[in-house]
Image 1: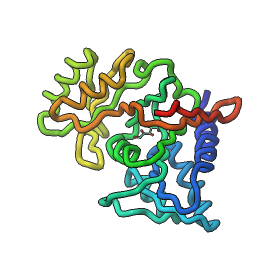
Image 2: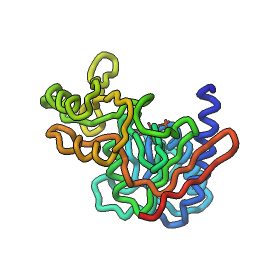
Image 3: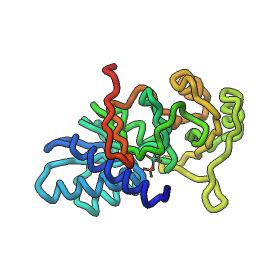
Amino acid sequence: MTSHNLDGFKKAAALKAVEFVRDGMVVGLGTGSTAKHLVIALGDHVRAGMKLRGVPTSQETATLAREVGIPLLDSENRWEIDVAIDGADQVDPGFNLIKGGGGALLKEKIVAASAKQFIVMVDHTKQVPVLGGSFPLPIEVIPFGWGSTAREIERVTKSPVILRTRQGAPFKTEAGHFIVDVQINRIDQPAELETALNSIPGVVGTGLFVGRTNIVIVGTPQGVQTLHAPQR
Ligand code: 5RP
C-alpha cells in the first residue's frame, strides 16, 4: 500500500466528516495530513457561504485555515465548540485512540475535551485490535528534569522511552515541552494507563484519548465507514 493510496482514504474520510458540520458551528480543527483535507474542504464551504468559526490545534492548521478563509477564534478564550474533528494514529474497537504523531497532542486534547462532539477520521490501517505495538505512545513532558520523568514513565509502563528529536535537538511542542515516545507492546487498559501516566510529575499530557470519541470515520478500499460509539 503506498502512502498515495492511503492519502486517498484519508481524504475520503475527511470529506465524510465535513457532512457533520452545519452552518453557524464552531469547529475544532485537528492537525496532520487527514485534518489538512478537512480544513481545505471546510474552506470550500465557507467560500460557498457557510458561516463557520474554527479553533485550530496547531500553527500549521491555523495557517492553512486562514489561507482557505476559515475565520478563527482567539486561542486564549472560553470556547463553545460544537464539534472537534481530527485524525489519529491508532483507533481500537472501543473508540480509544493514540494521537500525537505530529506532536500536537496537548492542544488536540484540550480542543477535543472542549467540544460537544469529537469526530475522528482515519484510513483503515489505523484500526487496531489493541493500542500499542506498531505505534509508540507519545507523552508530552516538561523539559525540566525530563530524564527523571522518563525514568518514572519507564517504571509505570515497563517499556523503553525515547526522547523525540528533530535535526539532532529535542523536538519542542508549540507549548515549549518535549515529547517522549514509549514503545508499549499492548495497551490493554488504556484508561488505567492514562490515569497512572498523568499522575507522574513532569507529564503534561499523553497521546491516549480514552472515552472521548463519538464517531470514527474510516476510509477503506471498500468505501467510507462511519462508526458511532455507544452512548456514554
Ligand atoms: C497529530 C496527530 C494526528 O492526528 C495523527 O498523527 C494522524 O496524522 P495523519 O492524519 O497525518 O495520519 O495526532 O498530533
